[in-house]
Amino acid sequence: MPSILDEFKSEQNRYKSDLHPAPYLRIGLITFAVLVGIVIYSFIPSGGIKIIDGPGGSGPVQVSIAPGSSLTEIGKVLADAGVVNNYLEFVNAAGDIPQSSSIGPGKYNLIKSMGAKESIFALLDPESKVSIKVVIPEGSRSKYVFAAAAQALGVSVGDFESLAKDPKDLGLPEYAKNNVEGFLYPATYRFDEGVTPKEVLQQMIKRFNQAATEQQLEATAKANGLTPYDVIIMASIVEKEVAPVDQAKAARVLLNRLAAPMRLQLDSTLNYELDSNTIILTSEQLQADSPYNTYTNDGLPPGPIANPSEAAINAVLNPEEGNWLYWVTVNLDTKETKFAATNNEFLTHKQEFLRWYNQNK
Image (cartoon, rainbow, N blue to C red; front, top):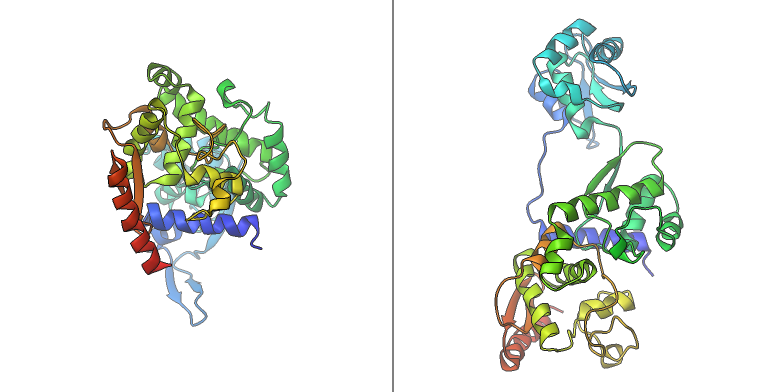
């Protein structure tokens, strides 16, 4: 049986494939150093990278900047490490770069003899800072968040699970009903060494609260006749069910079915209860006795089924206008989804999906 961490890695790969076909490219510190001619790389047969020293003796070096350090003190640290010739060179260069004042404390991976201006740009680059990186894809379940964070921190998943069971000090909004699911904001996080599991969850929830404030979540939800918790539940559903381009349409379907009223009949909510990602549920599974079974229960499930993105939340707050009551993702590779207002249209789309499924299973 795959571990939770294996499932998380699989979820990350799916997420990157489905939602981010073009990876984000960034020029890192060492690449930058190559561009300015400080170091030269040559690839060796083993596949590693060999650093050939340039003039002045270049090479990687790690520096530590204490909290509250002035630019002069930072310059002296860099001079002692051989990153710059002397601290005055750094201070003078910092006077021409206003962002220098935002250089924070911590450990940084730099290169010797890289020069004053280049060192400032490096210190401002998050990639240079020695940190613990945690990547939370949009639509991840909390158990995957715990697995990723636990691996990054080198602690037990149980440390995060215990906090989730008693989350009173994590900063959750009151309407979250002491449930962290749905409120661990998907993003890339960087933490200083020594960070605790509690501080990690607090930061993720803080990011959620910031996004909720920017989106005026509570006020907009009320204007739409919803509670903020309803919005997060619905956002988690559309995040799991459809591609971002279709989320506003899917949100309208949920609202139309709730208003009809019609049962939502969603595989994603039942999969959450079953702890699976089954594409076609069996008749037995569809009869599962669970409040998350939207085939047998009216209304929304009792809580979010994932941690939705800001875009998914916005889709629920600003749904597209339409009379649709159904959707079918007819191609799971491309995420192409078709919407229908009648049952006959729905059945046509369902047959299209089944043809695709039978050809690709």
